[in-house]
Image (cartoon, helix red, strand yellow):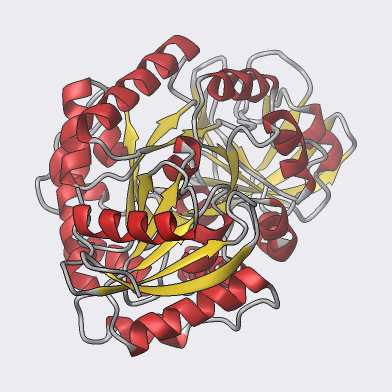
Length: 475
């Protein structure tokens, strides 16, 4: 099945979409990668879902990527004697290490790392920003605050700290257990939540040892401030606009989204735009006009993937949400202004052989109006460099390794095919042309351009370009 768009669709699975039948419908409607949210999924269910996705993959004959999204550190206040308390702006309110039930003047905060890190002047946002506190003083055991905005607080509400750099990593004990489980289940991508610094990625990379690629979720101001270093250590980025919009001014989020997207594109790392893209379709069969515009902006910006969360996981219209996203993306990519916008944001290639070959392949393909760029890739790196160029023609990534093909299913403009390794150069060209024909990327007489590494089966050695005719003798 060939997609008629370049941006990929990432669909979260949940109660509304966890059956094998529904997963197949979501794939047919346009989902390219499935996300399993480990905040709501135990290990047994995760393994069941992976098995069902692999069964759908076998049925449709296309590699499908799986992203496991780790919960990350969830910071919450304790409980109140009366469940909830009314507060007034200007009053004093304290968060402390006393486990007694809270009152209208204080509450237990079971996170010593917060008590020891918050300084006077720092903001504390409770319940997704509905309550804003400002620290007046902190002694390591309690934080005395003033209420800046909001009228109440209740049991176990989340705490966000936009001004505070916490001395804890992004992996909790639960995350470590979840990471071991998802790696054993052979997922393709692992997303790390609440990354603050590049070091947060190091532990996950050490545990993964290449068994899955690591995606950094950018949802904290501290991560935005150190974006270049985080990009360097990650395999992909997710613009997680939910928490980003809590910890930073809402009006700043669109600009940050563009900055992250462009920085990731420059680095040749996939970037996913997530959160509330078609939020109203949780309960309605059609989105709002503003949501359609939001999805369109991400596509115009050249993001690799756009993501559905509750819309496909728990909403009333999961298939319709995926189909709507597919239609929006397809329409945007045929817009007369699309190619110009994508071209204007292109970066200079890095000084490597793979980048030079990928640049040349794009320029030749566009100049000669070839049908496709066909790239042989064992590790996936050649596919990443080809997609970084954002060519107008499709990219067909051929890999003998099914895990590589699954990982690349997240990649912009890339159609992945699992293919046996070529025996020699002639076999490589013949195989590429045959697959282009079989997969609908060329008809007899069309030309394609092939990139590969010679000698064959040498990862990272892309050094060859070949123009060939589909369905006839190669030239």
